[in-house]
Figure: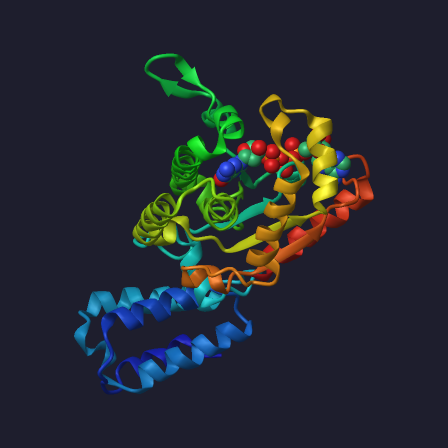
Amino acid sequence: MLTQHHARSRLSSGCAQRTQGTVVRSLEACASVSAGSRRYQMLLRKFGRLFDSSKILCHFPQKKKQNLFSTFVRGLEKQQTACVSRQTVDARCLDPNRSVGMCAKRLSVEGNIAVGKSTFLRMLSSFFQEWSLVTEPLQKWQHVEDSHEGMGNLLQLLYDDPTRWSYTFQTVSCMTRFKTQIEPLSEQFLSRNEAVQVFERSIYSDRYVFAKCLFELGHLNSIEWAVYQEWHTFLTQEFEKRVALSGIVYLQASPEKCFERLQRRARKEEKTVHLDYLQKLHEQHESWLVTKTTNVHFDHLKNIPVLVLDVNEDFENNPPVGEHLMKQVRDFVTEF
Ligand SMILES: Nc1ncnc2c1ncn2[C@@H]1O[C@H](COP(=O)(O)OP(=O)(O)OP(=O)(O)O)[C@@H](O)[C@H]1O
Ligand SMILES: Nc1nc(=O)c2ncn([C@H]3C[C@H](O)[C@@H](CO)O3)c2[nH]1
């Protein structure tokens, strides 16, 4: 292992055409991965080369060099559990000015209507009490301020007249999802060894499942679909890391099973939801997350890790099934 002494002697050896930014990024990356992991070794080699290949640090004032060096040494000493990929390191940082250690792993739980996402989130909250869970902002859609009527129920309007209300619904659903996804996390939460945040659905299912489906069904016309996509792309690029996810958990069940659960739950707005709509939504989920034939527009989303969990079986009233699902999520999260 590179010792403090070795690294110091390399500090004084020569110069190269590297930017300060590169050095800082390497240092931060070194500090953020587990010592002993392959990625760590790779960074170590890269870091060693940076020092070997000279000029690098001659642009830095002495104090800065010392700070950088102690950051590096702290990185060497740090024993973290997970091996973090470069892409994930980026996706985990909510604020680009924040140090790499102050990041959260961010997952979304995706799946068809009534597949059991809320139930699954409740189970996550009892297994992983330290995690931050963010439920879908459904109540906001059921209570939209209406200057004439007081409050309007947009979910009801959508299901009663989808062609009239789909565009309005998607603007509200997506806007509320953006708001929840960019909400800052407390310093206290972020400073935990493992800060994990889980969202029930995301700005991505809003577009690649629902809005796309409503367009294909003719409820969004081509102009509405184009306008929706334009502002969705714009906002996602603007917010960039603040809306990026580290992974997706896809709860998969047959449309028939979801329909059965939907009927049992009997939410009043969903009386007009039929099996064929659930079949269409199922196909959208499969194309996006399983066969990956959906054309997605954001690089980080193209390669995102997806955990597919079969939830046809009752996990709500069957503890061993539930525990097995939780274990799979635990392992999945540990991987990145
Ligand atoms: N694995 C399961 N086995 C049996 N019943 C389940 C299971 N998961 C959920 N349910 C039941 O199915 C119904 C729908 O579940 P839930 O509300 O969690 O779905 P959801 O995916 O959050 O729905 P939505 O898409 O509307 O947000 C509830 O009555 C719940 O008790
Ligand atoms: N059109 C449409 N777009 C969305 O982004 C969206 N997200 C959720 N829903 C519907 C499904 C449930 O009935 C109910 C609660 O999940 O809201 C949506 N409907």
